[in-house]
Amino acid sequence: MISVEEALEKLLSNVDVLAKEEVAILDSLGQVLADDIYSDVDVPPLDNSAMDGYAVQSSDTLGAGPHSPRLLHVIDTVAAGSISESEVTAGIAVRIMTGAPVPKGADTVIRFEDTDEVSRREISGGQTITEIGILCEAEVGLNIRRAGEDISRGSRILAAGTVIRPAEVGVLASLGRSQVTVISRPVVAILSTGDELVEVGQPLPAGKIYNSNSYSVAALVRRYGAVPRMLGIALDSEDSLVTALRRGLDADMLITSGGVSVGDYDVVKDVLAKEGEIGFWTVRMKPGKPLAFGTIRGSDRRGVPRRIPHLGLPGNPVSSMVTFEVFARPAVFKMMGKKDWTKPTVEAVLEDGIVNTGGRRVFTRAVVEKREGRYFARLTGPQGSGVLTSMSQANGLAIVPEDWAEARPGDIVKVMMLDWNEEVI
Ligand code: AMP
Ligand code: MG
Image 1 (tube, rainbow, N blue to C red):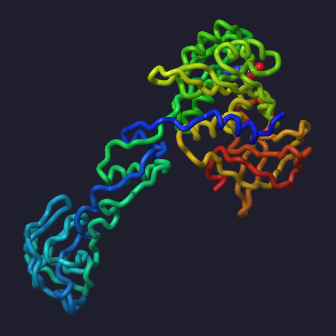
Image 2: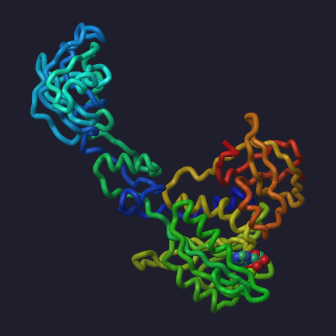
Image 3: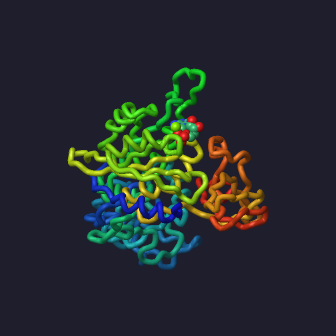
C-alpha cells in the first residue's frame, strides 16, 4: 500500500503545466495569468472630481463658512465624459459632476452640500445657476482623484501566476484589454465503465443503474476550471473500451470510473496495457483504495504524439468523488498553472465516532458547523461508498489519520471543506 502523499506525488510527476492561450478577459476567470501585465495607460487618465460639486481655487474659499458664504461666478458645467474648455481663475467656479475632469486652474472641488446650491435652485427656478455661495474652506486637492492614482502608466499591475478573479477581470478591463494570455484550461475526457450503466434520460431496464459518475466527475472538472469531455459509457469489454477511449485521445487527461476493483482488473488492464501503461495502486485511504494510474498514447491538439495521464477512479459514486478531490483536483490545478491546490481545512470537534479498521486514512462525509467560535463535525448518516446523497448532505470530509484505530466523539479532527456555507462562517 502507498500513502496518499506518495500516490499524489507520483501522479503529479506525470502531469505538466499546459501551454498558454489567449482568451477574452471574461473567459479567463479562474485561469492563471501567463505573463506579467504592464499598463500603458494611467487610470484614471486625468485628474477628476470625486464628488458632484464646484471646481474652484482653494484660495477663494478662505474665510468661507455657513454664515459667511464666498460668492463665486459660475461659468460652466462639466459632466463625466466631457472636458471643460473654461479656465477657473479667482472668483470663478465650474459646476462639476463625479468623474468629470477637473478644469484648468481649479485645485479643489467643493461638494454641493457645502454650497448654497439648494437655495440657489429655489431662487433660479430652473434657470442655470450663475452664482454660488461656498460655505466652507477647502485645502488644495480636496475631492480630486489624481491621474494615475489607481494605475500608473508603465507599472506592473498583475504578476504572472496570478489566479484571475472578478477583480482581476475588472483591472484588465480598466487597462482597456479585451484579451489576456493565460495557461490553458485542461480538457478532461471522462469515461464510465460498467455493463450495468444506463445514460440519464433513458428508461431504466431491470438490473441497471444510471451513470451518475460521469456527471459528478464532470461537474467537479468544471468547478475547478477545466473542461469536461464526455466520452459516455463503455461496456466491460475490450472492444467497447477501446472504441470509447479513442474518442478522448486529444484530451489533456483521461479519467475513467469503475473497473478497477479486483474482479474487474482484467479488461481495463488489458486494454490500457495495449494503449499505454497502467499501474494499480493500493492507496492507504478509505474510500478509494483501488486506484489505477497510467498514461495512454494520444496526441495533442495539433496532432503531435504524446502520453496522456490517465486516472482510473473507483466506480462507487462516493469513492469516485472523494478520490477526485484528493488526486484529480490537484492534477487539474497543476495543469492550469496553479501553485496552491489545498482545500480550506478546519479543525473540528467530532460529534460521532468513526472506526478505522484497516490502518488507512479515512475520509468521512461530514457536516461542519460553527458554534460559539468552534467548529463541530457530525457525520451525514450512512457512510456506504454507494450512498451518493451522503456527499450531497456534506460540506466537508472529516479525516481520520492512518494510525488511529478509531476517532471518538469529542476528538479533534481535520476536516477538508468541500464548501463554505452560512453554518460554517
Ligand atoms: P466497480 O468499481 O466498477 O466495481 O463499481 C463499483 C460500484 O460502483 C458498483 O456498484 C457499480 O455499479 C457502481 N458504479 C460504477 N460506475 C458507476 C457509474 N458511472 N455511476 C454510478 N454507479 C457506478
Ligand atoms: Mg464495474
